Length: 429
Image (cartoon, rainbow, N blue to C red; front, top):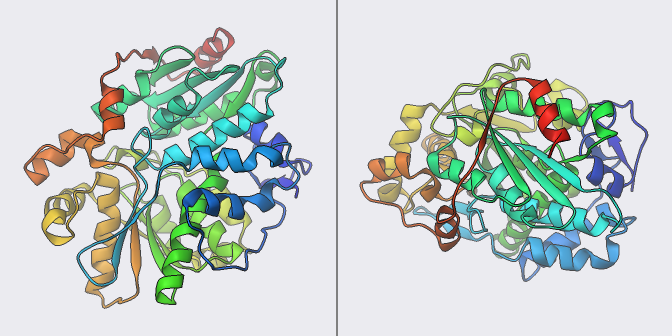
């Protein structure tokens, strides 16, 4: 299978080249030249087996083929349980049981293992450049920490992540450098893309990406949708519908890709915070990226979602794309109220991002929707103690992995909103 750029000006290439490059030479995002079909709905026993079966067609020509089972076993070594909420057809897909308590752990571990497998022992050290709105950076740092042949450079918007998220971004040391950028996530993402597209810089620094612009981040996220949807279909005989809290659209794009492959996935609804670029578009407006606004659901503070480019590539036109999704915006006051009421109403304590999905679920139920829905729980609520604990009236217990992370000493560096400054840091990393 070959992979092409969403912008159409780069030659088709292999999965291995696409993984290493991160971004296509023309500035586009890599996508499969064709989307493979997956006909079986028989569920697999464990998540790693689902991942191996679903992703194998994309890696059939890869040098990783012989070690692919081991890569999947490593990346998907913790479960993604589908928890029944209070109410007949309500579910929560918990994706926060990994090392950094966020859904990004699955794909970050998959990408790290894949790039390690592709790296020649004599190759120069590769710098993984990642912009993060809260959770991606920590997952990437954990996945690549102390991995021979790799450095990690994290860019995050100073003051726009929770204190525990900030600690999780800056507590690694060794081969990981963390920069607090004087700007928004969109600014961080723009700096990262500029560096990845800087041909002269790449003559001196081997760069790759770990944002969801990377196929190595996008493709693995199909696995948990495949696993739970096949199990649900086997048990109930109907597709499971998903509400996906989203900022940069990577997780939602993976759900769509799984559906396009033929998995028993029903409707996909996008839940956003007050950054409403997507709800405006899917309601019929133009796609107009905007400066992002800080919200309680900070990991979704994105005003120019990168993976929108992939979604447009997979549809004939904007009308066709609008038919594939519904998007709803949720403001901070509603996020707070949903967190406050969730323990009694749903039997769970949600993070602010998961709360956006729960509110959308509540709206669907209020309008008479009786289909089975699963809200995607993207992060553990303990990562947002300062927001969640006052609303639910008690501290949120730390999962062991997060407690271990918080016990480390954290050290980050400031970075002005200036590409020349980033370029200089990359040349000296």
